[in-house]
Structure formats: structure tokens, C-alpha cells
Amino acid sequence: MRAAEFIPDVEKALKSRGEPSYRLGQAYGALCGGLIRDWEEATALPKGLRAALSAEAPAAVLELTRASRATDGTRKYLFKTHDGHLIETVMIPEKDRRTVCISTQVGCPMGCTFCATGLLGIKRNLKAREIAEQVFVAARDVAPERITNVVVMGMGEPFLNYRETLLALKVLNDGDGFNLAARSIAASTSGLVDKIRRFADEPEQFHLAISLHTPFEEQRKEIMPVASRHSIPELMDAARYYVEKTHRKLFFEYTLLAGVNDQPNHVEALAELLYHPLYHLNLLRFNWTDTGFGATPKREAKEFLRYARELGLPATLRPSRGQDIDAACGQLAAKDLQARPPRTVVPLSQT
Ligand code: SF4
Image 1 (cartoon, rainbow, N blue to C red):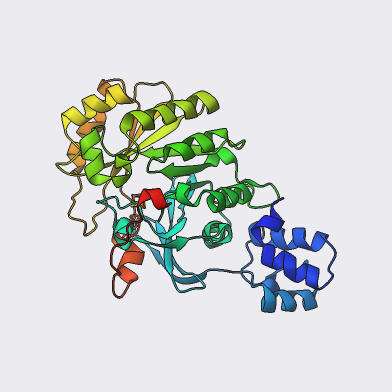
Image 2: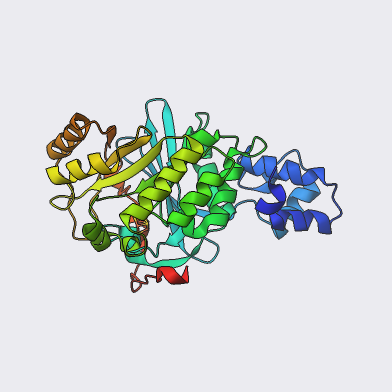
């Protein structure tokens, strides 16, 4: 159980009242398993204690300011943090799966040129509680159905907030917490090679996805500033370390941008670069944002997929979901900012 790390304010409040130690486990179970948003719902706790906790350490740290639902069933949640920042979360239903895509930072400093979140710059890292609570709210919303998967692909570069992100994932995986299998949880990085190695060394069997977006070095530097710090060969060394250490499949995310990275020579270079039985290419259709990029038309995206498979590269084309509620990373929060702040990209050397 990870209660003391995850809810230190609750632990402190319980200790100051001289409560028995098992109360912390009860509180942790009520938050992470019972999905309560108010201590008054935690009926295992005495009434007086519920009132005291509500005053000293509120159950919910995020305020849900808006929930919207797309015609395809995708749901999007806009949250306000205690210090007034907006973050977003998406829940994607597919047949027997319900996947929650969560954020780990307010904005993102990585500056990927096609990303609406990247345009916001970075405000701050989220705490583990703020990261995990996004899943609790979505789970409460879809109940009695269950959340089956969590992907860390919302706002932010999770490996720049490694400690809090990992704690949140451990709580989601914890049998006394949210109790979701580690293999149903995946983190996505833009390619921080030292953290890819560190993630490979973690004992939990979390999955990993690496955002690649082009197989060409110079083009990657143009659309992903991180590429100026870590070359593609360095990235592929870290990828190989991950699969050799974990023996788990490794996913490469590839957002198809019209006329930019969707040409036959891209497929051919990808087939060479990703030649490994555990590598899998995930093609994503671009949801429109005002970044100046456009989406590859559906027919051409399918042709890209067909050619990749013909060249022996395992690949999947993900459908574009939730477009009528702007369910691409960063879009809703971007729209809700009255005045967009100046773009702040933190040099990677300072992170
Ligand atoms: S694509 Fe991901 S890493 Fe790049 S700016 Fe957007 S949120 Fe950050």
C-alpha cells in the first residue's frame, strides 16, 4: 500500500488526531477503490472523523469544471487545480475497453510543433494525487462499467515528472488502490533516453510508447525539439535496452501529418529503423489544432498502413476519436484559456 506517500496530508491529519494507523488504509481504500469525492461518502470512517478530514485534507484535489461527450462516446473532462490551472483527461470507449488518457503536467515544455499542449508552454508538474484522480473521476463516471486501460498520453511529458507519475501509476496498479493490472497501464514519452532506461528497470510491468513521428533525424529536430538532445540512434539504443530488459512489446507513436511525414520514403525508413520482433508502429490520425499542420486523409493513412505491413512492419492505424469535443491532446484546455500565455519552452538542460 502506498497511502503514506500518496496522501501525506491525510496521514498528517489522522496522526494529529491520534487516530489508529489502520484509518490511513481505510481512507486510501475509500479514495482509490471506493472513488469517493467527499469524505462524507466514506462510511467506514466515523462521522466526526469524516467532518475533520473534510476540513483539513479534502478528498478531492481537482475540481471537475466540465465533462463533455462526443457522438462516438468519447468523454472529455476539464479539471481545475487548486491553484487555478486547467488540465484535461479523455476517456475512450472501444468495444470491451474503456481507456483513460491522463495528463501529468500543466502544459508541456517539450515544444513539439504540431501539438496544442506544446503551444501552452509549461506551468508546473502535477502531483501524483492529481494524476491518479483523473482516472478515479472517469471510473466513477463510467460505473458500473470499469476502466480497463490507462495511457499517460495527455498534457505533458511524463518522464519530466518521473517521480510523481510513477507513484500515480503504482497507486493505480496497487491491489489496495485502484487495482488495475500493470500491463493495462502505458506511459508515453517523446524520447528522454535516460528515463526510458530507468522505466525499463522498474519492477512493475507497465508498457511504454515512444513518440517517433518521423524516421529522419533532421525532420525530427524540426518537429520535436527533444531530437536535438537525443539523436535517433541514441533513442533506438534506449529502445533496445527496454525490450531486452523487459521482453515487452514497445510501441512507437506516429502522428500522420499531411505532406510532412506520410510519404512512401517514410514507410521505407520506418521499416528499417523498427526492425525488431517486439516493436510495433501505432499510426495516429491528427486531430486538427491551430498549429499549421493538417491531417493525412483517411485513404492515404490506410495506404501508409498497408505499405508498412507489406514491408513486414507490425502496425496499427488508430481511429481518430472524439473530434466533435476536440479530444486531441491539449485542445480543450487550450480553448479554455482566455488569453493564451506566451509560449514558454524550458531548455532541456534545465529539466
Ligand atoms: S506531443 Fe507530448 S511531449 Fe510533445 S509538446 Fe505535446 S504533450 Fe509535450
